[in-house]
Length: 118
Image (tube, helix red, strand yellow):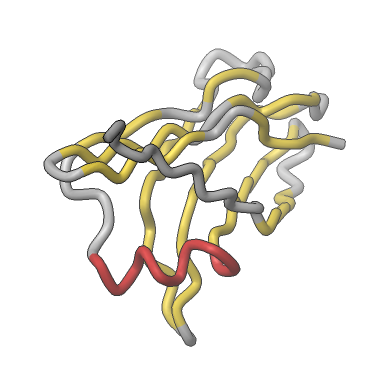
C-alpha cells in the first residue's frame, strides 16, 4: 500500500527540525487527503506536522512524495521521551465516490547521536 521513508528529527541545542520524509506508494482516485504526524501521549495526540490537499477541479491527485518539514520549537522535553514508541503518521483520504479512509502507521525512531571529538 504505502510507507514512509527518510524522515528525520534533529534535536540539537538551539535547533529543532522535523522532516516527515517521503510517502512511497500510491492510492488511486483520490480527490482530497490530509497527512498528520503526531505523538500519542495517553489519550491525547500531540500534532507535530499536518497538511492537507483538496482538488477543486474535478480531477484526482497523487499522494506520493514529500510529506513536509517544520523547524523551530517543535518538541517539548516531555514529548521527546514519547518519540520512541509513540510517533505515528495518519493519512485520511477521500476518493471520487466520496468514500473516506483513514490509514495509520506507527513509526520507528532510531536515535543517532554525535559525539564531540576529544
